[in-house]
Length: 68
Image (cartoon, rainbow, N blue to C red; front, side):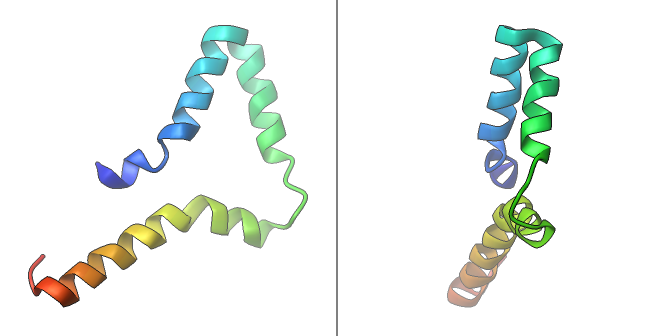
């Protein structure tokens, strides 16, 4: 559940937009999010960074503590 919490602000943005602007607002928000001007590599970094950080923390704790 901790890993899913990293995506909480994204979910909150969609929920608040849905409640305030309706489905059309969610479509507009998704359109702005898909308008990525930096490059697809950075999009992947932004999307999967929470997973990588969580995995790094788990492995570090594994090395320090010795248990899962």
